[in-house]
Image 1: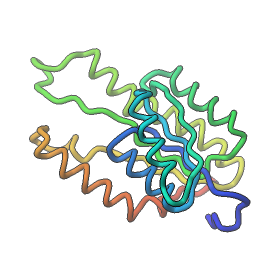
Image 2: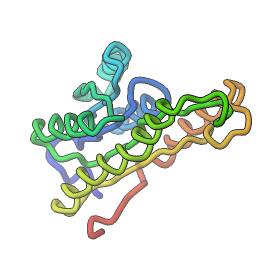
Image 3: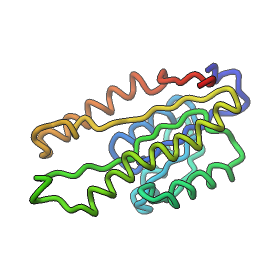
Image 4: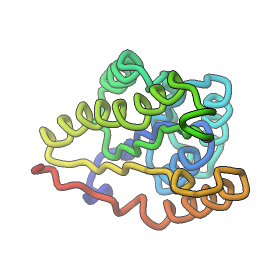
Length: 185
């Protein structure tokens, strides 16, 4: 999509944007002259991240939406907040997610694992379905869905997670602007 042909700045929606890969994606979009909608459930961390993004040289407009995307209500709340902006989402970076470590049979909690499925799988499908319908109707839009490299690490310690997170954030700088879906799908 040729964003330069648009009036005003394009708008990117980034979930899980209060820290880590989500924050790095939001920063990349902002530095590439996008306005952004940042979403996470921790209001304090999200507000801190939003202030840092607003202070960038490109001076993006940053909309903050606090939502628990592990719930259907949280996804619907986010979608309604986006609709209230009366601006199309040009790019969705569906990044929100969590991990659970430990021996499945003896160490992990079922409620935590079900929350992981709700956030990492169910809410991704729910949000993408809502946003992609609008994109298809408009005939334009891009979606980036992130996945966790650390989830596949045999050692779930920070020795594995920190380098993988940094690697993924650096990779996102190269790929985030070119991940596209055809509007005719």
